Image (tube, rainbow, N blue to C red; front, side, top):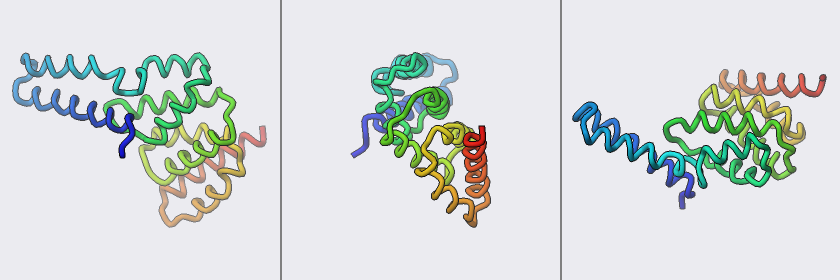
Length: 170
């Protein structure tokens, strides 16, 4: 059964598709404007449970009570208009938190997922978080990916490996 996050992402995708379809039929007409208003009215609450703006503010203010919700969001990996931007901001904020072993384990799996596939920009945000993760959780899997037959996986694994080495040398 899809999570609330994924259901809400689908709703946002449908609302966004309605904007595009109404624009195609009647650019800037009343139906297009109504679809745009509906999208913007629902966006914040559908983008993240409790509101994306509130979630990002809580992360910015180092509110540890939101960590598990954010990690669940990242694990579900919802795809909707601007979701990559939100994930990137969340990952930037996560660097300033002290993470539990369980949280590090989850993040290590997400970092590995980003090495294996996904947008380059989001991979970059995950890679920058790698030095915060216990190397024992990541290093063995990174070493396997360094031997991958896929050049992009190799390149990404090399990048993460270098960031982790730099962090231990400083």
